[in-house]
Length: 187
Image 1 (tube, rainbow, N blue to C red):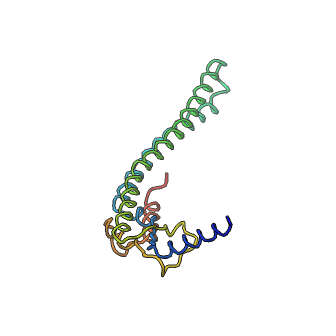
Image 2 (cartoon, rainbow, N blue to C red):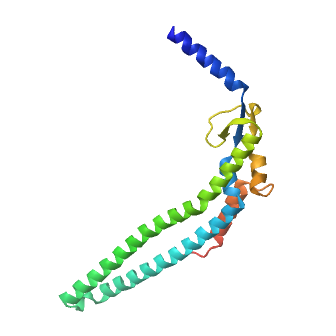
Image 3 (cartoon, rainbow, N blue to C red):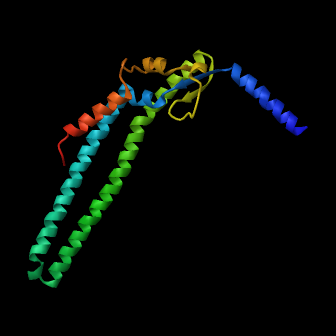
């Protein structure tokens, strides 16, 4: 009896679900191509550049002192040698601490800048879905399968709502980012 009830309930859910309107959206496209994302990436890149410059300066200091140690250590007294070794260890520790702290700060800054963009994109999709009577929206990046003829594609309307330029694609964004990376001087 329980099996019959379960089968009947599943059949009823299937019939109910099939009468509902479903949507799909490429969410990655929406938040990556949003105009605000370009500004966020610029801020993140500027921070990364400053961090790389600071890191390079610290490494240069270490290398200079390590070279000095190698060249002069034979003539130093034990106390000078110990002090110089301690100085090198301190610089190494500062470099490691900087790397860890900077990495955490970059992750926090990226979340701080990108989360509002993702929330704005999510709200735009929700508003469009509600306006069109759509009960569920699937992200094309995570859905394993959906019949494209049975769902409404909200991506074009959401792109328009978010102010994304017509014709701009994720592939173009990748090309832009690669060109920027190549244009930056090697460090």
